[in-house]
Length: 160
Image 1: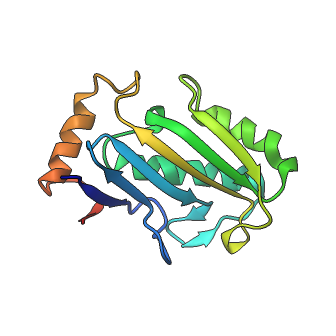
Image 2: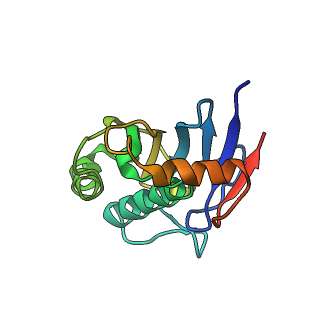
C-alpha cells in the first residue's frame, strides 16, 4: 500500500489553488515540492527587491518545507528553475550557490512567459532522504516516524 502525506509549514507560504506545497510519498523517503515563489510567509505577499531577493525567499521557503520532516537542502536531488527572464540566470546562480554548496542536485533552468503573481522565479524540486549527506541521519528518520504517529512539530500534515 502506498502512502501519501501533504507537508505544509508555518514558515512557508500557504498553498492556494489546486496544489499541495509538498508531498511525501511511498517509501517515506521521497518528497516532491510544488513550485515555490518568493512569497513572504508572514505577509502572504511576494517580496519586493527583484530577482536576488525573490530567489533568496524562494529557497528559504523550500528549506522551511523540508525542515518540517527533519530534512534540508542536502537532500534535494533534482531542481527545476523557471525564470521570467533568462537574463537573471547569473544572479540566480549566485544566490543558488549560497544554498547548494556540495553534492549538487541535478538541475534544469527554463525561461517561461510568466509566473504566478508576477514572480520572477519559481523553483520546484525532488527530495530524497537516502542521499549520501543524509544516509546516517537518525534525526531525520525519527522526525518522520513521529509524523507518521502524529507526534510533535509545528507542521500541518494531512494523510490521504
